Length: 219
Image (tube, rainbow, N blue to C red; front, side, top):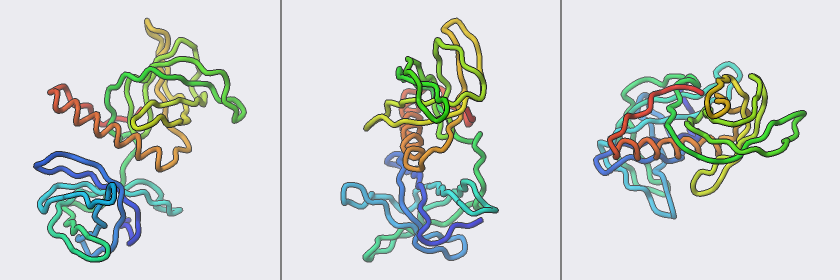
C-alpha cells in the first residue's frame, strides 16, 4: 500500500556525480508525485540534482500490510521553505520487497559469534563473515551448529561495530570447517539501515574496481 506523510523512508540516489543513500521522510503525496524532505547531513542539505534517478523504500507495520515496499522515481523539482523538499515523480508503483531480494555482497570480516541459549549469549568464538545483506549473512566457523540455532554476531562495520542476532537457516561442511547461512531476527531498523548502507557502499567499491557485481539474494 502507498505510504503516508511523515513516513520514514530510505532514499537511494543515482546521479552523474555518484551514488548515495540517505534516511529521510515523506512530507506529502499527490498521486504519483512524492514530496520528500531533502536529506540533511552535518547540518547541510545534501545536493541532489533534478533528473537524478532515485529509489524510495519504507517499512509498513500494518497488521494486514506489514512488510517493506519500494518504488523507483526521478527528481523533477525542488521546493524551498522551512523544510526543503525534493519532488520525486514515481516511475513505477509501490511494490513489496521480498526478503530474498536484499542485495548481498562479498566481504571478508574476521569477527566473533556466539550461540544463544535460553536468551543468553554463550561463549564467544571466532568466525569469518564472507557475504552480507540487509537480511542476513554467510559465515565460516570451526564449530558445528544445527539448523535453527540462534546466534549472536558482532559485525565490525564503519563507523562502528553493531551486534546482530540471527537464525541458522543453512549448513554446509567444507575444508575450513562449516559454512552457515544466517537470517537476521528481531533486527532494529537503525541497524538494518547501517548494514544496507555498508552493503551499498561495498557495491559501489566493487563496481569501481570493475569486479563482478553481486546478485540479489537472501541468506
